[in-house]
Length: 314
Image 1 (tube, one colour):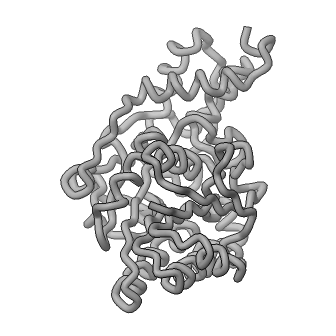
Image 2: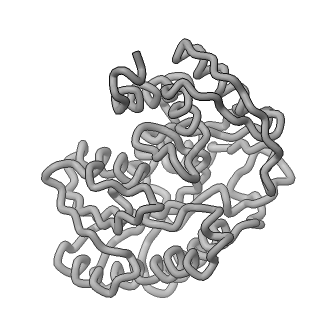
């Protein structure tokens, strides 16, 4: 198949590109390389077609028309909750108007299906665990709001334009290539501190939990969605709750270094616990995560260690 991956130079998108290529698909990467988005030209494999373009650009219609993709994996987004709160106009411009532009171009190019990167942020404050597809969506950030709105546009384009979709609501994705700067996941932030032999900050009491899913398992879900999950939404996680304190202890074992801890205040809006029920994805997508948290953290640690100057990790 021929496919376009928007945001394909980014953390998650680049692993999806790798997974599609491994199956022999022809891939074109479209990415703006926005400085706050984590997209890196180096993440795009050699020989893969790359277009440096924003998803809001009218020029993507020509790209879609000429490449004639069967599937579009839409992972380009303004992904920062903090930026969305400071500038909701920009957030909506990228995440809503950018999406509509992609969907319009997909319809004109006779694309069969769009696979969409949604988020746990669409759920907002959680009253009952585990989270599943029937959990009420009450997003508390502009980012979560735009991801929820995007899901409604997917329904509209399927019902009115015949454009099929599968939406994947990711938990806390981690793994190689995740930018440890800015609003990154706690695992990549911690690993950077461990490798630099610096202390770490743990907000609240560290007992708050999340559902951490390894990026290659997320890529596998995007492979499963190529032929399954028509018009549906899926929680993509592990079903396991892990605390920040547990992450810290695991990295101490992996690295052999025990950095000092500074405790911070609870972040505004920080949920106490997040956990997914992934039964629907297992049943309908025939997908389950294959990587344990410890194995994923080890692989991520090894990746970042290899990026460090030798004297920094000796």
